[in-house]
Length: 234
Image (cartoon, rainbow, N blue to C red; front, top):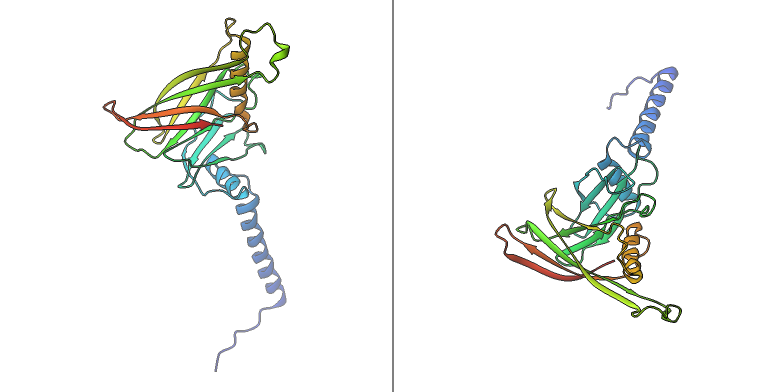
């Protein structure tokens, strides 16, 4: 015969139930509602909210080039992710995700304050699957076609195309950072300014209707070309 435990007095039951309820509420707050204790924890929480990932965080560098303080850079076997961290980890953080596209996947660093910050450098981040590569080079083609050339009769040309090249060594053990500096230059033509402006505004990651052709070349420590890929930046 099973031995019956003595019944707890009513006050003890009430205290026990209150303790269990408090523990459950604390766990709920801790895992769902508590402020994140780190940038990485915040990133993974945002990933779950956006139904992407889980990704491996590669680096969280200070990001002096943008209007936010730090940038989470992460990748998985299926995609790549970026998330800006604002002062005080505000509610503005959001995960920007892009599915992998072959050997090299390129993302534009978020920056929706291009003109107000006075910064005229656009950063591209290249994720690759070629571990022996230690240096990378990208040739980016900026394009612009005037939609209504009739109102610009004084212009000899109504379209612009030019290649820009940047190089980078591998950083943070897994990525390449390409910086394109477009400081103010009075010698630039109207069409060139329009092409640069279209490229620059990609940083807010809401204008993805423009495609810029690009060629990426990866080199090993001996300077030997180990991978080349034609792609687009959008």
